[in-house]
Length: 102
Image (cartoon, one colour):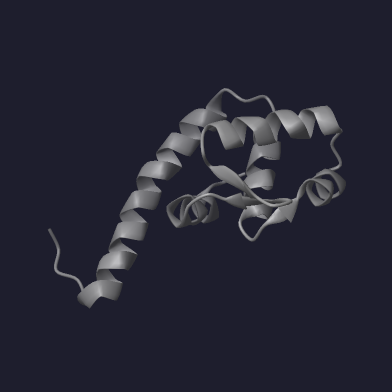
């Protein structure tokens, strides 16, 4: 185990290493999706919180397609709902999303 620069260094290391694992899981999840690009865009937009209408308008998809993507991302706990916003459920997932290629 590497020595870190105190608590902040340990947190950065944990975030970096955890995001590598989540990134691989996310790649596996997306590998079989026909709307892979949609999922990636939904995740990226949700990093700072996004409403369903904002997602639909920005991504120019119909309600059914968006609802399916949101439902799957909620089911696997990559997103969560906070009132009317969809947000990335965990900082480690958020970090993995920044490393994800479209």
